[in-house]
Length: 97
Image (cartoon, rainbow, N blue to C red; front, side, top):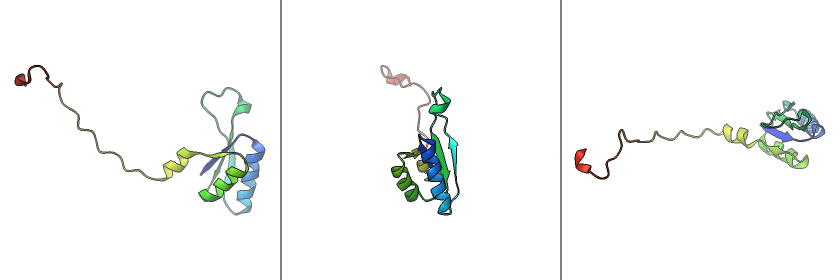
């Protein structure tokens, strides 16, 4: 699971709380696309804590859960391949093929 925070203090507080509760947790800088300022990058907390616990901490420290990671945890069955035509469809002279 990943949680994103704009302030380093909030990220470090969440890491300390999770470690106190016995979970693995680390804070790292999250590089956002298009962000030029190194100081403007948010902090990501990566942990093995349950989602509901991380959600409470995110609400307390004004962060958010990374939805891509949460959605990636569930395996979605791939769609079957599309049936595509092999040649263009004739509209004006269907008798030609």
